[in-house]
Amino acid sequence: MSKTVAEVMLEQLTKIAGCLTSLEKMGLPKDLILIYVQKKTRLPKRDIEAVFDALKDFQKQIKVPTQ
Image (cartoon, rainbow, N blue to C red; front, top):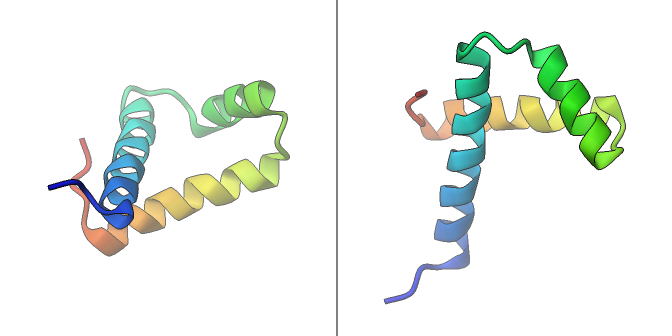
C-alpha cells in the first residue's frame, strides 16, 4: 500500500526538523545555519527564520522527539 501525500509530508518535515535540531545540538549557532541557507538559496533572512520557527512549532504540535 502506498503512502498518502500527508504521510510523505509528515515524514519529510520530521526529517528536516530533526536535522535542524541536531545541528543546533552539535553547537552550530542558529545564525550560522541561517547564513548558510541564505547563501545557498538567496532567500531573505526573515523568510528562512520563519521556516525555522515553523519547523520548531511543527515539532511541538506533533510531539516529534528531538534527536
